[in-house]
Length: 143
Length: 70
Image 1 (tube, rainbow over the protein chains, first blue to last red):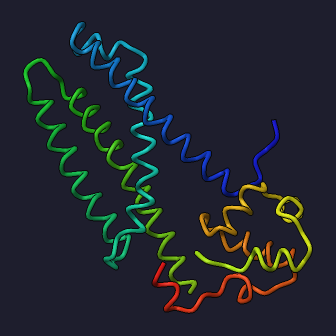
Image 2 (cartoon, each protein chain N blue to C red):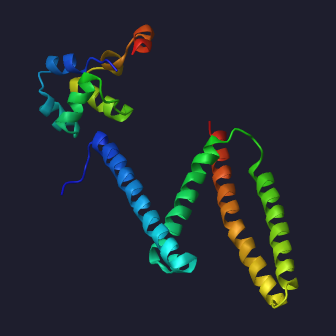
Image 3 (cartoon, rainbow over the protein chains, first blue to last red):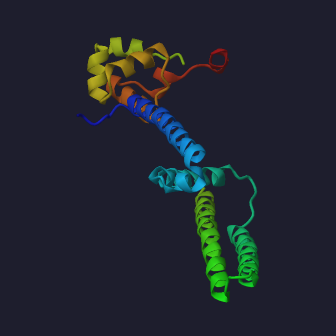
């Protein structure tokens, strides 16, 4: 098969892939919905399609971050936004960690682990957004 | 979008197929551009200009009034 050089066909190809992706997503959702009804939540999550669905959702969320960053109109410094989200993140993770360790049947270590995981999970997208904003600001300075 | 690609191509004595091969696109794309049904990228516009020895202005410029009608 020859590589497509024609820009119009490349674009057409991307649009076709988008349609296929939509159909595929509906198929996955249908199968997962069927599993949810027949086998319950645990049965649905045992299906490997669940992992595929979650991974594609996370990837598409990360990719759309670069679009929403370009869409922003406020000119706050990226560092300030990062420190705010860092602070809020720290507060929430600490609160969850403390509450978990105070719950019956859970130890201090459990609270630490859950709080730590939560902190890292929020930190990664915050750092990524910071990176995108800083990059965009550099591009604006180049003008 | 109206343009003068067809006139320039005939003046340069090229068929759609020959022009397409020169630029490295398909004949259908040239046909759609001539009919104004496909909006080419600036890169492709420049390639067409080089192939028929014309400027961007000569091939693609339209007066504002006319542009807004479309």
